[in-house]
Length: 609
Ligand code: G6P
Image (cartoon, rainbow, N blue to C red):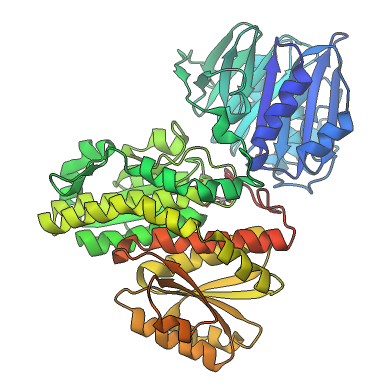
């Protein structure tokens, strides 16, 4: 949510910043801005509402004589996404420029104090108070002024600050919003996400919460806000640039959908132990005893990750016989949850930075649960703060609507269920069969993706509809929720996911000949019940798009359209049934001319509450 990039000591500062912003744009994209200090010691600012491309067009061939600058792409929280509110924001005398990710919660009271002291505010943002606060504290040392200012602030921040009074440094600080320093030949870079700087360096130092750094062209120092000197830990990151480019696809989302065959192979590589009919998950080894003893798991997540968690709940209860509570992280953290003595909490998050998930995990930990992470981004905050866990190995996910990360999360949850199952109630033979069925999934994913053209045709027929209903039962109920979410996110069509049997308790009132109903009707233990639900839709002239198991000819007679997926075991079906959902949403959004990778109002990583 929002992206920060900064550069010092390097030539071509403006193009480094613009390129960095483009790489960060998936995190927020309603406005963007850039500030540099020129050789005369003046801060020059360019800002634009809209995409980074609009800013780039605006600045055109602008090439100020500079080697220091900061830039920001915004996802608005306080104040409309217009040019004025775009970052960088400045102090009264235009001598300090600041970019900020996060929320300054006490900005109201700070603003009042500063206004009383004569500061003049130009924007509706929470961030601007910080620029004025730094101005207020400034006595010839920018690093100290920023440090003192942050002591007054409540909320979350990742900030980068420059000043014409000290044009040889960028000050950055972090609390709840990631930031890293990148070592690059002939200069230094700072960024909220290493995607912004991987073109220049793979050597980075991550800041921890409540740390502040002064970065100059050839060195840097890090301290805590409380003045403790920090020894930096240099890390080598392994981002393959190809993985963050579209590679010939028209959208990242389509690329990521198509990557799923490989991603699922990656997520299970080295983790299946056929000999013992179980899973091998090194990140859980240290917690073996607790995993054997626990009788309650809590799964915490938001958005798509929450839906993957719901599937995990079904799968773990079925395979391991442990009670699982799957909770929206945002609800869990405020409801004073009951955490049992031997509870284990899994925080599930693609980015590993979602504010609510992180806070929920901290709450669970405070109440005594062992906290484990299921994350994609290596080294992310949730991954670092959890006591152990499992990476999903989905690679960088750029499309705002999550696809491949969902599948990899579901696969990892299946592996966890297998491991826990074998520790408890699952026999060796059952375990071996499970291992075999899991190994077949990548090939089965490929065969569903090969049917994309048929789904595209269905999408064309229904792309003008304004409401969709998605139905599923058991393991596939969360898939119905995820299918509806995908459609809402990228095509702005209203869609509701429902447990199929619940349809008659309300949503059935919506059904008429205009209403497409996507029904997951695979041959599992509730198949005949779902067929009954299809009849109920047809009796009211609704249009049924069924996701069915291959060779099911019965369903052809009942549904208007059938999309087939190969046969597997019940708990692995979501890995196949979600694929038509993703493709249907994608092609409907294409037909409607939507901004698929950057849907309106959304952000990839939500680092504010
Ligand atoms: C945002 C994204 C969703 C994502 C959710 C949770 O809303 O747009 O795609 O599912 O955050 O993100 P996480 O990184 O925690 O999985």
